[in-house]
Length: 198
Image 1 (tube, rainbow, N blue to C red):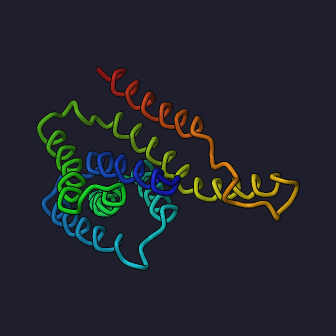
Image 2: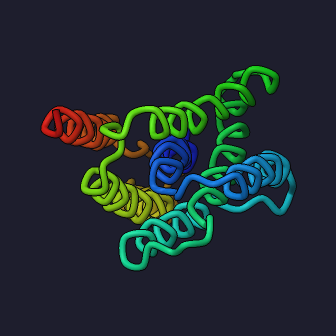
C-alpha cells in the first residue's frame, strides 16, 4: 500500500466518523450527507479525482472550522458523506469488491450518527472538540505525507551511488518502522482519549 493511499485511508475513516458526530443532527444534513456520499464515490473513480493531499487539506480546514466557528449549516455532514464516498474507492483499491466497499464505507458514519442520537455520552462537546483537533492534525500530516515521501525518495536516490544517476528501483522506500510508529501513536492516542472519558 502506498503512503498516499494509507494517508487517505486514515483521513477518510477518521474523518467520516468524527465529522458525523460533530454535525448537528438534521434531516437536511442527513440527506445532503447521503448525496455527498454518492458524489464522493463517483468522483473518486474519475480521471480528475482529488489527490490524497487535496482531500486531507479540505478535511483539515473543515475540522478547524468546526472547532473555531461551529457553523449552523450542515457542512460537517456533507464533508463526512464525501469522505465516506471517497473511502469506497480506497477500500476498493485494497482489494475489496465495490459491492462490499459501499456498505462498509457507509456503515461507519451511520453507526456514528446512530450512537450520537441514542447515547448522549458517545459524543459530548469536549470529546468532539478533541476528536476534531486530532482529525485536523492527522489531516495536515496526511496532506504533507506525499511530499515528504517524494523528498525522502529523492534524497535516497541522490545519496545512492553518489549522485542523481542512481537507479530509483533499487532505492529503499520509507522505512516500515516509520509507518508502524505513526500508526501506533495514532491508535494509542485515540484509545487513551476514549478510555479517559469513561
